[in-house]
Length: 102
Image: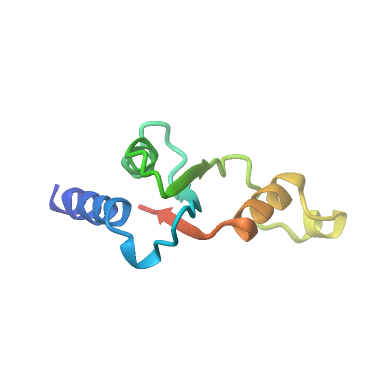
């Protein structure tokens, strides 16, 4: 339980007090990735709480990695799967990332 409150405090601090990053009128594009695929995951829940905090300076999008393929050199020979390209482009264009991992 102590870990949950620590993580929540840190996320709350991040969402509320990002004055050092503040540029007038700028909204930062943040991509959030949960390392758990479980629908009722605490980590995914924390990411949802970040989104629901509705900080006007942050646009947080949770990216679903459930369709992300395992590493497979045979697939690599056929080209990069579209789901990987899509997530890559989202991460590439983001100003920041939040990883919530078990």
